[in-house]
Image (cartoon, rainbow over all chains, first blue to last red; front, side):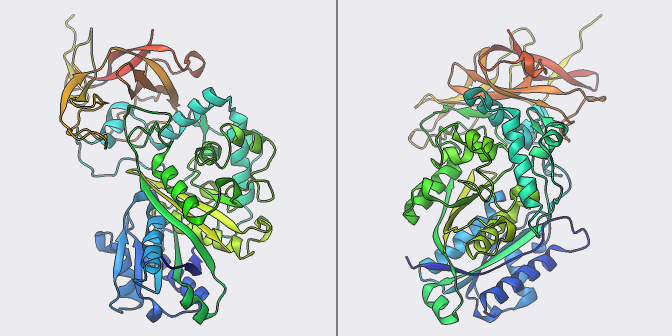
Length: 397
Length: 140
């Protein structure tokens, strides 16, 4: 497998843009990433595009084709990738594999989404299907996505003595750091009291501790080492790109399931992600504790506590100590989400993996301004999607 | 006064017995894994004979975790009006399966992980003169 470089990235601000069609956002980020990479559309040899769920793509999820039809009909292969909230990273993984294998020398990874308002409901128009667990969890129980995250947090409080303050402190950090990110959606800074007094949504999670949904789009240009040298721009390297799915016996109470069969404490927790993360560290030749910073999927503030422990970056329970001592800020011992994370951006499901790539690349280039992780050499990027889709990317400079 | 006729909120998930209900799942005839709801195949990758048969779960289990739903879930859920927050729990059964369901208790101070709960059926809403019932768990 060849070395793969990220030559350029482009990212749209995250937010709500009701008058801006998705294709407009996508063409902007594609053009920005090409310019950043110092190449032209004609130089691209393939496209891996996130299959947008809620708009565009001619109603068939064909975002990549829609982009090529608009910008350049060059006849190259286009792969539209679908893995819910892991889509952006999985599209990146397809692009990575095309270059690493030698199939292509320069590939574009792009993804965007415009999200319907509010916490994600059962898809309007979906059939009343008694064999569909997603129908069952809504109709018979009424448990929304934040409810699943809340179950993990309540359990953590029991197992480790994590308090509501620990959770709230993470939210305070996300919003403080995110407010300094020019591309974030939420610029409001909250005090600990404001977070702890925000409305309860799913006990013990409060409103300011749960990510919202947003419109967003991002793109990255990947190329071989040889091409990078030819073009002459200083790249960031892909140390690893890994994808995994759910493993039997994983004790995670996973959206949208209503049961866990034979849960085991020896099977990787959140296996779709943890297996991908383990593969990524192995491929990169780095020990988990050596990583310089993490961009992870903080659907709720609690994820910053239990996920790094699941990946052996921290010992069980230690993330609570790090949060107590403010060590997960960009200037701390283990910076987590120096971008501001999903909390400050809101989730544009399809695009999040590439949002993390753009943020990671800018950090590793030393271009993160007041949020710069000093001396950062490596980062871990992680997303998780419905259906048990997990991804991990390790970048290095 | 005659009791209203009951109808299940979704067919096939539980026995419609108001006194002694049970959740209806599946059990793999080869590796013994339980599933809920019923399934057509065993999803244990180490199990090669994936034939499953219908199996009822026990009536009681232990609370593994819980949350409280503080806003009305959107359709297809039929929320009460005015909305009253309700507890949702994950219950661990002796069969080695954990199942989610509404709780009869909504005060987090009265819920303790590890407490024993019992399955019951309760009215979710009325439809066409019938009580539509769903399964819930009640602290013992």
